[in-house]
Each structure stands twice: as structure tokens, then as C-alpha cells.
Amino acid sequence: MFTINATLGFSWVISSFGFFLCCRYLIDPLTYVRLSVNKSNNHGLSSPYIRTWFTYSDEERWQRLNLLISWLHAFITGLLVLYSFYAYPELQYDFVKHVNFVTYLTCSLSFGYFCYDFCDVISNRRGLNLFEIILHHIVILIFFGLNIMRVLNIGYQMFALLAEVNSIFLHARKLFQLFNIPRENFFVQLNMIINILTFFLCRLCMLFFVTIFVYYDRYRVGDSYYLFVTIILIPVMWIINPILFYRVLYTDFLKRYKSRKLMS
Image (cartoon, rainbow, N blue to C red; front, side, top):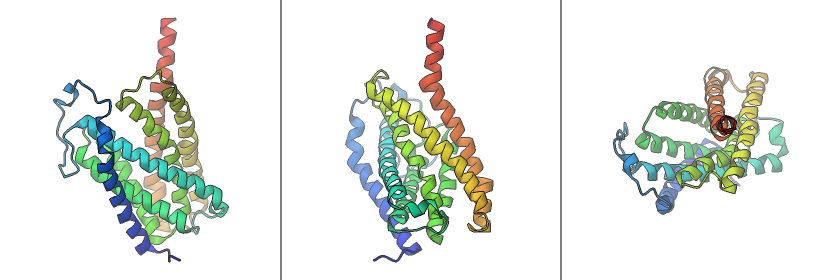
């Protein structure tokens, strides 16, 4: 039997980082599939602010690689989260004190992925949304790191990781675009519907309930932790997620509806 403590958690974090780093090289050949013939989109792009051995010279291939690994993380984590809520019903009744091997492993795995993705993003991401992604990753890393280090509030992290169920479809949506799959494709259409439904349920509804539950548990989670979550984490998530939800809703549904209305 394993003793669940911070040492075990951070050893899993390192293993997780190494796992996604290996996936980077294993998945790399997939970035050549259906690659755009016209490479002019890469010309004129500014260089990344920070250049490391993570840095890719080809913007299109890097976006594909980054999204493929993000999708893999979402798929693994999403399945583990759904399994945990099904197999361990006690998780639902105590988000503060609950911890077991599977849930702690899931949280550590996800923390390792976000460490990897943070390094990848700052080494390759260009454009105005870099700040938005870095802000998101920093607050998530602090939130996850505190939970793993203290072996506390693991239930809250698992509840927050329900967002990864939606990320399966959110990342798939972008991958369809990057791999030039036609919008009229049946699976693209199906993914758009599932994506918007899971976004509402697994992100917005989850965030709503976390906001309420943390308030009721404010005397159990710890003063500094409660201040960080209520003053920084939750407000940032309430800004990012509704904006992203509207972008997806407008692009996939409202924009098409308006176009059809104008044509008619």
C-alpha cells in the first residue's frame, strides 16, 4: 500500500511531466497528416517571446501537437474523474478531507500536464491570447499545487477537473479545424452539439456549484486557501469561461443562424 503524502504526489507530477514529454515525440508524426500545402500563414509571424528546446519552427505543426497532447490529457483525466465520482460516492460528501489513491493520482497527473503545457505555451505561443492562457495556467498551478502539497481539498480539485470532460470535445473541435476536416462532416456536427452541452454542464454549472460549496466550507479549507480561491481563482474562471462559451456558441451556432437568416 502507498502512503498518500506530498512526496508521493510530486513524484507522480514529475512522472506525469515525463509522460507527456514522451508523448510529444510519439505523437509528432501525426502533425504531418493533411498538412496545409500553402505555408504562407507561417511567414510574418512574430517569434515566441521565450525560445527553449520546446520551441517549434512550424506554427501549424506546433498547434496540432499541442492540441493532440491536450486532448490526450483531457481524455485520460476525464475518464478518471467520471470513474472516481461513480466508484467513490463518498467523494461527493466531503470535498475537503476526501483522498484516495485514484483521486490523488488523477490530481497529480493533471498538475504534471499543466506544468508541461505551461513550458510548451510560453515557448511557442504567439499573439494576444498568450496572457490569457498564462494567467489561466498560473492560477490553476497554484490551486493544484496547494491541494497536492497539503493533501487537502482533493475533492474540490476533482470536481474542478470535470471541466476536462468538456475539454475532450473542446479540443476535438479545434483539431477538426487544424486537420482541415470539413464543417459538414457528421462527426464535426455531432462534436459541436456535445461540446456546447458539456461546456455548460461541466464548466459553467461546475463553476457555479464550486463557488457555493467553497463558501459553505470556508472554515474547513483554510483561511489563505479560501482567500486565494474566492479573490483570484474563481473570479478569473468566471471571466475566462463565459467569454470562451460565447465565442464557441457564436462561431458554431449563432453565426450560422444569422447567415441563414440573411440568405432567406
